[in-house]
Image 1 (cartoon, rainbow, N blue to C red):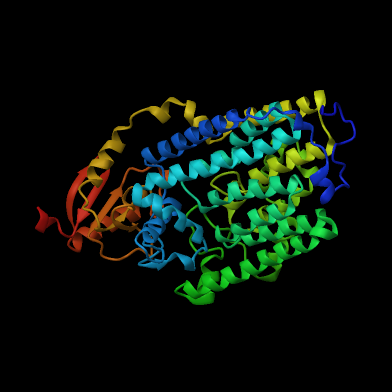
Image 2 (image 1 turned 90 degrees about the vertical axis):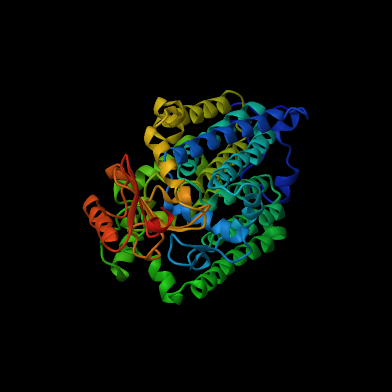
Length: 504
């Protein structure tokens, strides 16, 4: 059948849900079978672009100990058949006491084949690119092939994915394909499939149970009496998973229940930026949950940018409710990096927003010129934002330029033997984490008295953490005074060793 034109009555009226959603005719039923190869080609192109971006960041010594260094140590632990530990977090620190992400064990077989930190970056690129495929297939069925091409491209190039891919590796990458599979099934009226794809999200991270609960609520609301039970059970499973995850985390954390929650409170020393020094307690919490949701202005800017690529039409879909857990905790947080558009914090919202966009267009029965206007607007906003986010690095000459200091860094790191204990600068840790027992130099919880210390004394001020130049200089002199010998000192890289005298 032909898609409706203009703003004609929708093929699937908003009040029709449940069985009606599954039996209603779809405007894209006209699409010929066997014409979907381009969706897979688009996913392959995105995979290549994501891989190049994240690997180029890593090769330029811009990947971080938090989180890439931690995650490679986690995967390396699983590959060695034991529970995950991270030396970056502390000596033999049990990572299941920090975040509940058993899904990372799935990377262990890949690590056996390619025991490198780069494997994590490539695996993440595959997961993020793969999440576009269910979205594009659903958009093709619901709105037609041209719409699927535009929506898939705009999603793949969206600023949230750009920031996430550029920011090393994060376990949330596993959530993206599950979210698109679940939400596209929900939009298509396949409610049990939506629940089935949502439930594994609880293995990605402890907070994902709240997203599962939100999906369950939408299923119960949309499904009518026949599927209300499925939705309520899904929501209950999500809430229960959060509770069980917190029990597991507190039991593994060295400080127990208080230690786990204390380490995730403001002032715990997270590396991404300074904490808000405002006081705690009930008054502070009430402020964060009211006026604090829109102040400072950075929060409003982020909210606008989340919905802008869909011309705010995503808000007209019930699927937008699934955003509530992911957005609310960020706005209520008093940790400044949560408020902005950087790092990986917007990875989760992009699939939800774009599936909601397709769902809203489908429900409205949008077609013809009206559909093309929405698609043109979506593409226009995406292209307008593109130069302001990391994908633009791929067209900058500096990304492809050979930097002499990176070659020196690799030569100096090659002096460190495999399986040695090391303390290294923040941006050097990921380059050593797949073959040594490395922790962060100057971090209070680092393993003391390592065999080797490697420091980049000329790192740019905006990337320096956790020590200032003066603190670092005193620390190096103190290390030399306590028996460390200088093995290499070149182009700002300093390598010290307690075994230098014996190894010569």
